Length: 115
Image (cartoon, rainbow, N blue to C red; front, side):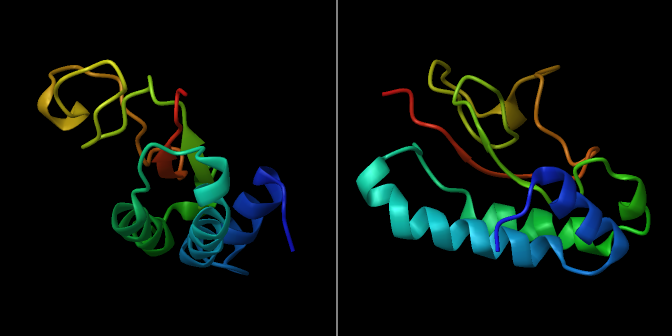
């Protein structure tokens, strides 16, 4: 069953489902379809699993607006540890770079492909 981002976050906040479950479902869909679609430059599977586990472990997850919602990120948006399509260094190496953070509870899965 596919849920909206709002319903996904609500399920994770209430503890009905886990961020890890939603992340695994999304990773399976990417594995099944991305060979044909080529929508992603790379997939951050292990990092996403670790970030999902962090969301699940947070005592304040009931306050996170996008708790456990797996997201794709346009490849020109900085994600910690990943390079954007136009830069030389991963976001974690740049000072004061804007990055997707877990402060809202989402789980970045992959930067999208520009082509």
